Amino acid sequence: MIGSDTGLYARFLDETVAKEMFPSIDMVTAGLLFPTGRAERASGGFRLTGRWQFGSGITHADWVVSGAFIQRDGQPERDAAGAPDSRPFMVPRAQVEVIDTWHTTGLAGSGSCDYTITDIFVPEEHTLEFATVRGETGPLSQPEVHMRNMPAVPLGFARAALDYARAESVTKADDYRLQVTISECEADFHATRAGVYAAMRRQWEILSTGGTLDALTPDERAALPLSRLHAFHTERSIVQRLYELRQTASIYRPSPLDRWLRDTNTMCQHIVAQDRILQSAGAHLMVGAPGFELCLGLVR
Image: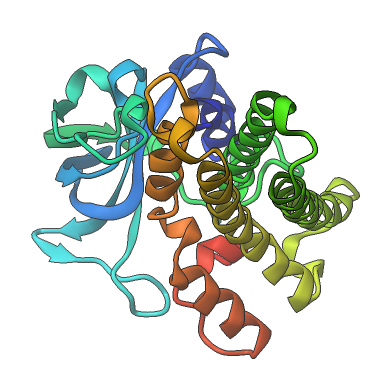
C-alpha cells in the first residue's frame, strides 16, 4: 500500500521534477507526513533535520517524504491562519539514516523503523503542499488521495481470514456455531466493503467530472474517513472471532490466524483507525473544528 503512493505524491510536484525524481514507475516512496522535523530556509530550498517514526517500507525505498515545520533564522514561520507552517520534504533514501526500532506486536514485515535526517539540503522543488497541484489535475490530484488505498489492507485481511476459516472448517460444515459465526463475519465484511466503495464511488463521480471535494455534502465527505476507520475496526473484529472459532488450532505457527490477529491489532493503532478520525468527521458533520482536517481533504 505504501509502495503505491509514489505516483500520488508526484501530482504535487512539477511534472519535469517528478520525471527526474522517478525515472521508473516502480520506485517506492516511504516516510512520515506529520511534521516532526524542522526545515530552515536556505538559498533555493531548506536545510532539513529531524527524527521521524513509522517509516513503513523505508528499507527498500528510493525516496523518503517527511513532514517538517518551516523556520527562518531559527524562528517558526506561520501560515495565513497564524499556525506554525509546515510541509512534506522529499529526500533520497541514501541521505537518510534508518534506526532499527521496529520490534513490534504485529506487521513485522513492514519495516516501519524510525529514521533521522541531519542538515540535508532539500531544493524547493522537492517539497510539496497538498493544497497545490503542480502536475496533472483530476481525481488523483486531491489532498487526501494517499489515504484512499488504506481500506484495501484491512478488507484484504478480512477476506483472507474468512476464506481460510471456511476452507479449514469444511469437516464441521454442519456445526451450528461455525455456521452462525461465518455468516455474521461475512455480513459484516460485505456491509463494510460496500460502505467503503460507496463513499469512494461518490467521491470519484464528483472528481471525474471536474468537481472538487467541496461539492460533496457534509455526510458524503465524512463518509470517506469514517468508512476507512470502520474497515479497520471491522476487520479486527472478524479476525478475532475467527481466531476464537478455530480454538486451539489458531495458536500454532502453521495457522496464519495468529499472525493476522497480531497484525490487525497493530494496524488499528494507526491514526486512520483512531478517535481523532471520529472527532474530525463528527466536527465536520456538526460544523465544528476537525482536529485532523487532512482526513477530510481539507487543507489551508
